[in-house]
Image 1 (cartoon, helix red, strand yellow):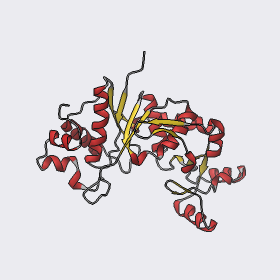
Image 2: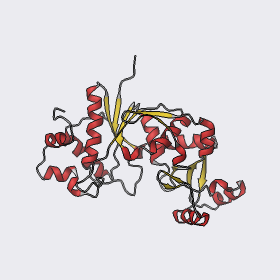
Image 3: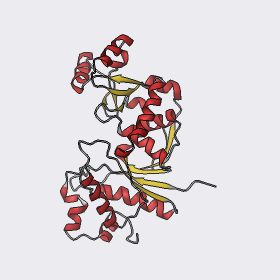
Image 4: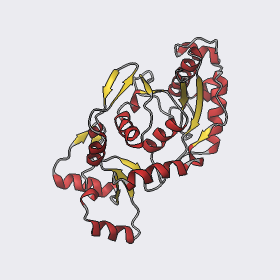
Length: 285
């Protein structure tokens, strides 16, 4: 018997939702509804400096106004840090992560000293400074209490997984994973003890998510997510990376654009049915 379809909407509570968030939430909700599946809401609040419970409550209010329903309890990432710790410990024990003591300024200086650095999809790649530390140098830095992040040793990761990884995307078809476009990415941030990349793949697996609906701005991150899934033995969902909504000037919608927030639309008299139709969804729930 096939597994039931499970979708999710997973916003970060760092501000008010806008029309772009509404589109993602509606797309995931309607996919589950049409195919008799389950729709989950997850609050990605691993960053305590930017995420607030008030913003999470605003998310609940906005989604309820849109007419969406979701399963309870809602998963708050901040309540499950041990899950991410366990995954990171597994990767570290297998020699797939290494501590990185560099600050952003130091990384930029190293890139400038090199004259040029390999570029990935998101700019210059990390030059591997801390990967090249000797064992004694690394132990000295650890013993001194210098804060550090944990980076993926991409060479070791690809040696463990091979290079023949792919995922299926409803819009783009079968995509070959090219994690070298992100280099030795940070898997555990020094300030919060995990990262978006690690937390999201762990959560999707633990929650049984089978199809992920999200914006095309996260398409590049999927190259890294696919490697983490393989390293951790996690299932691979089907992805739906949809185009991003833009304003009249063609700029991507952002939380700072208050005119496009769901709250401002609601206060201006827009009805849920009107917004659903504007975004290309019927108003039948």
